[in-house]
Image 1 (cartoon, one colour):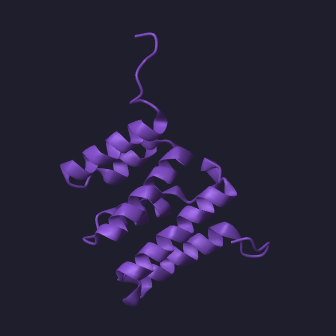
Image 2 (image 1 turned 90 degrees about the vertical axis):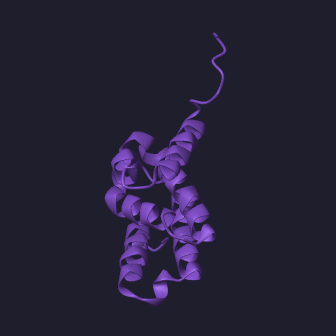
Length: 124
């Protein structure tokens, strides 16, 4: 990801596209590892919203959030929240509409939390 030749976008796209081509890549360990690398890239490189293939990241993370394995869902939730901080939660809404209502509610609550909307208004 730090390479001057390949860079962080190539690394992330490779991780996601490669994951979609391999059967072993759907194991819990592989999914959690790939999502952790994507999260690390967002946190380490402070990627600007216009610098990312947003739909690719959103689709991958939301699909992982719908995974039956709890560890994958929790890691994907963290990734979705980092993405929401980067591009804004409103941009993610179309990507989560197919999820179950409880999942959508949890995501919306988390979006409010990370954006500070759930804090008490000091002007009351």
